[in-house]
Length: 268
Image (tube, rainbow, N blue to C red; front, side, top):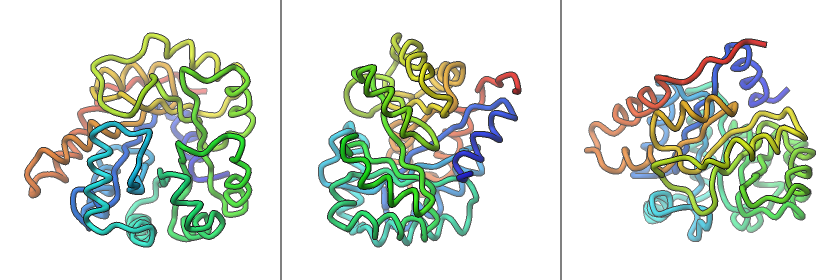
């Protein structure tokens, strides 16, 4: 059983919904991510997404785009991402996932990338631009290396695609709560419960809801429906806006505040 699967099994036994923060490696400065992630975990993060900066992050809204561009300007490379993951793994035991773009992985060499990610302590890979039809090229190396490849389901996904994702998925399924790009929103989609019901017709794999979660009440709402909630833009907004001396504590406080009211599910 993978570290991600073990974590969701444990959380189910405890009746808790996972909180998954997203941070961009090398944002806002080099070296910050290695200190930030352990603080987020101590504050209550159950898994962590480490964003690999990319020059054309098509799935991202303004906040994560800006973070990605800043990190690239800071000199972040794939090698730096592996080193950062390795440094974080030495400090935390929760599952770590790389979120990046297939173009970067393909250019580096898929098998080489997957093996180096696994060696650095990464447990899963999220590639929003990976066509489902080409997923086998990444899925096989991931299986050999013990990584979970995370697939997406969106409001625009057909029944056939949902079924296909359900058959391939390990770790968890990333449910995009609304159409469009990432970013903090004021409300969650009314269509989310039905989308989750559609997914559950085909699989018992845990579902993590992302895109648009920015407030404690959003996470509470998600915790009633899914096994995990993913928060990126709202957290990066906090990190970006506070003075450097207080950014780690401000980020940790954001996590504590967001998960403070999460719903406890009945065990079993």
